[in-house]
Length: 292
Image (cartoon, rainbow, N blue to C red; front, side):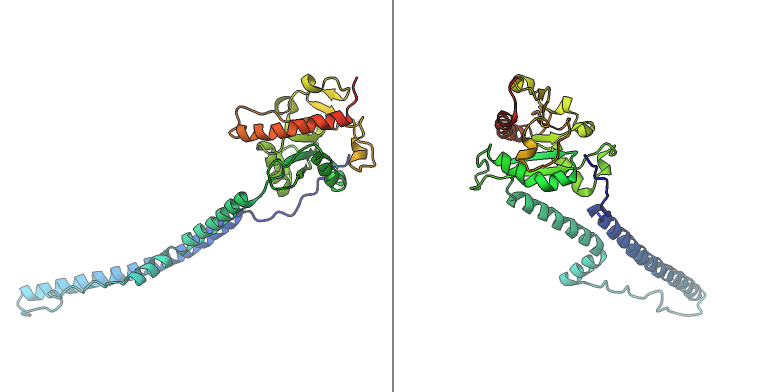
């Protein structure tokens, strides 16, 4: 089995874009603050000058040099009044960066909500983990067609659909962060309650941890010679031929099903998908398994 270790060029994330916008906002704010400090300094100097002149005027009044002073008895200036439109315009001007960032994130949230509400989930999801990418390209469609024979129209959209998610885990990858952005998105499915059936091999055990996450198949399919604990091995079956793969499968390739965990917040959804995936797995094993 070949390994797919090529990394895609890193694209800017939403956080990177937001960080750049925040830096631009801070630069603009610092510029405005510099101008404000400069204006404040000029006002301070003018005010101190005015105080000196008024003290001199007061001394001249007390000494009888002058009888009155227009400076000291000067009427206060009338405070400028702004219209509602001017107040709104002034608010937008001083908060344009924050409003821009808020609008940016609001647009992203709105798009994700719309996508979640309008997207029709498939009737069944099968994950391919730690496979040669050529296998995924060549056999994904056939695997989907194969499993469509085992299920009904579960989501009520008038058709039977099975999605196959490919996750290129490998022995060289020590953490999920070593994968591409697309792989992280697919691998996140394993943390949710959507994809229950898993086709994998020992190279991905460090991520899947079968002893913890997969159901023990012995109580259900122990009569088949390909069954061993959580795994139903595929190398000694007609699976490769059925999905159009003309090479011999590695000995450690297997199919399994995830447990429904009580600790998951989405237990109810996971149980619903399990009730669809388990009968499909049963039909699959009955087709490809060999009774001892």
